Image (cartoon, rainbow, N blue to C red; front, top):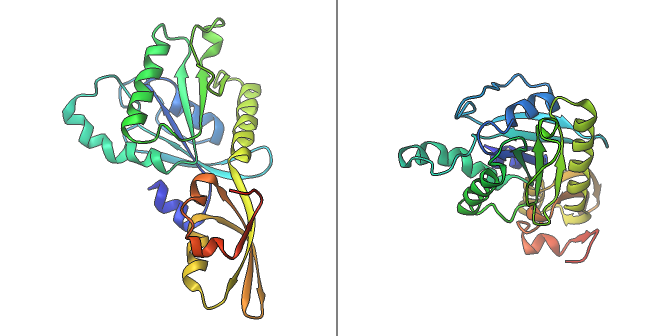
Length: 236
């Protein structure tokens, strides 16, 4: 599970979402070198597949593929996919992959957004990836001011631009800080490791000084008592 993996590692999580056949699995393969199933079939990806992705600045993140969405998902399939789709909520960033060459691209985008709303994940930072842009030079998609990038998953230059965009968005969503926590407050130390990526730690008599970073989303999960010992890069 994405949430369980974050608790163990503190690594940033990115989830690929999108209408079926938008090219999510192909994009995962191309970005990470993974060998996932990439076929032109409904529900070709039934179980999440996670791989490590190294961004231009050197940061390692976890990129996870999810089941392809469709409109009016049959009721008997909802329960089967619910646990898979629920994992989207644990992501720090969503990559909403769109088949930009499809004549119903905008309708498919809306279908995905509807599912995200039902999952209570519509508020998460999202980058719309207009895939297969090489097949449709003139895009007729209303982005309504959303963050977006046009690419072809088979173009190396486009993939580099995408990784740079991902890094920039994550940087904007990342908070860094320090915390000097009393040694006897093991509960607060454990909470810090669970929610954040601890960059360094140093024992100081009766305290331990930590340098850490975490997403704005995870910041809200830190205990108030921990924040009393912390200094953040921004005021909240």
